Image (cartoon, rainbow over all chains, first blue to last red; front, side, top):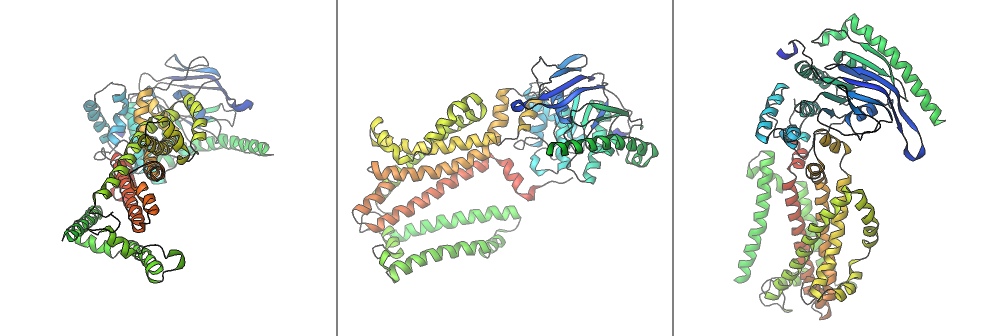
Length: 284
Length: 308
């Protein structure tokens, strides 16, 4: 769609994630809920990984553990070889792995510019003027000049999500954690958002962990699509997507794309049926 | 002569306020002042507002002055009240020309303002702390919930016993009500903030102190200001109750005293004055709130919306 989408893909040198045998048990009032069990996944530096699976399978739990919002019960997660989450360490969110939330979490009381510059300024990495300058450059890259004084509530959902991704990227994180960021969007906004995300990915080469329900979205965006089982969740299979980059929408109709999709549909459907039956058992 | 001047001043004030409002609306809708004036005057809501006033005063006139219904026969009609209120030589000693009238207004305003400010100054930090710190919440909430339902008047004897003189006692009683309203609304405001804003701030590297000032305070502000408007109103009603029992000046005292000495029109003057001041003070809080929450205004007015 623009020059940078046709540029050769560069990949960040760091941001490798190693999820090793992770188990997460919630224990509210003595009722054991095993959200994740023996969940393992290797993500290379600069890799774009999409995770799909039935609702309530523990995708978001995994993301929350990586983000530092929640404890892990067993197992560990390493970031570039250093422990990120273990049962003995206190979870700590940090700007090396920024989350973009499902319903968006731009501060409604701050303007677009104040939102985007929040990270570097609050961490005292840049002064306000330098941060403003940097934010303007990055906003311009995703076609968002001239809205810096607007409040998030004045923007469309597509623009809000783009601003939020920029707010994450300005911190130069090692990993971007995206929790179904385009879920509530209409088809047109969604496909425009995909193109912007791919463009940013191609330009920065950041490791991306992307949760979604949408199989087409997963294949179109990712290098690797991981299918999660129904609760207790673990990675059932991971399929490499060898569609060339830069991607474009025409690929959605190629035989290669459709083959990948049918493979995923099989795997996810099986889990969806299990989840449904488990749900019926719980109800009974 | 003097009456005419004061009436002209009053009329100028009201017309000025209306003109200012129409000017603002004209800017919002991007039309000329004259066009907006016509729009406003011919708008259904303006006509209904006007009709409401006319019906209210009309009913008062008909029941009291015209029909002299049995239950209402001791009350003054609208004409009597207004002519007493605007009279340079009032029969009962209280009108817009007398110094006493303003002394009463001054005392009430001073007490309500002092109580309101004190309640705001203490109530907002108290509420933020309750929402911010689980331990403090557990300490204080049950106490607050038990003390809050005690009506302000029940505090009057205790306040008089403890505090020197009736003046601080009246202010304390007024303060108490406003304080609880402000505290609980601030707490509600903090609790209403979406968990994801806290998470997002932490992801972006904010410290606890940063989160307090960048998430908790602005996030709670809409509820805080709703609380302050209620607190302003609550200040006035508990103040008047306090003044009726323990004061020598103030509009509450004036109303009660006028009843005792059978100066009935003055009761109405006092009540109407309270209505006007109470409304104005709430409006003031609203204006300040709007200034501080530009982001909400921008969100609510669809005209400023930007699309891709």
